[in-house]
Amino acid sequence: MHPPIDTRSRHADAASGVPAGMMAPASGSATAKTILFGEHSVVYGRPAIAMPISSIPVTATARQATGPATLRSALYHGRLDAAPERLQPTVAAVTAALDAVGRPRDAVAVDVRSEIPAERGLGSSAAVAAAIVTAVTSLFGRELTADERHELIQIAERAAHGRPSGLDARSVVARGPVWFEDGATATLAVGGPLSFVLADSGVAGRTREAVAGVRALREADPARVDRVIDRLGGLSSTARDALGAADADLVGTAMTEAHALLGELGVGAPALDHLVTAARTGGALGAKLTGGGRGGCVVALARGAAHADELAAHLRAAGAPSAWSTHLEAHG
Image (cartoon, rainbow, N blue to C red; front, side, top):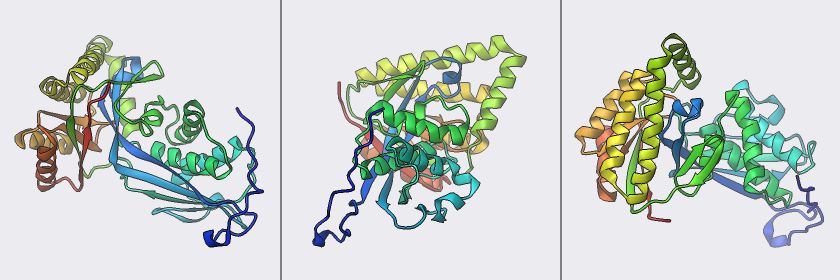
């Protein structure tokens, strides 16, 4: 890892409002993510496709402090070392970033503003960590490589999830859909514009419980579960080609099949099934749960940008507390 760059000698001009000898605040950002294909099957080595949701952002600002390190967010405001247990992944992101720049005992004040609902399978913990590590390392003049940033996010993700695959850490800072396989990611080509809608079921996701449930089911009936897992992996490959060809109908059909297969694995929920049905009656080309399941969100493929707005309103009317649209543009 590169040695830290000392920027303490920088002096701000009077107009900046930053005291002489102090560095100007720095910021970082990330977004929510959705898994289009590969939930649960990715745990068993099959590929997955995820994409960032730019309409659901996270920003973090870091500045030097004269007292103890502090954290301000919608969930907590106070000393970093007194943050509640549920925020330990956030604390881990701050301390990992300070360690990376060689200033583990420096006082910083970190302000986090997130629009991502927690426990909905949208990568909240990874996105918050990504924004924080960028803000804190930038404060001390350090520009991270993509791999360095990933490793710092993963430190926070391990505090949140134990053994994260790395998919969230990559996708919350991606600029488009990503292919994830065997721990490596690659940007996917998109042949034409596609519009998606995310809808919150209002039920907290239970990823750890869902992962454990699939594992237990596989131990009890490995042949059947492996067939489902293989098919989910195959749908990821089908969708990769369909995205490249902008074949929206095929992407939608694959999404709907994936939802049914995930239900066979026991990770569905009545609230998710309700929203998937509502999306289809609202004209979606396909819809499925996204993330760990047993709650959380669904993702639906709209027929175009204008239809995405109509579909989001339809899903809110069907009971979704929140719905967001996101758009993919063509790129190679």
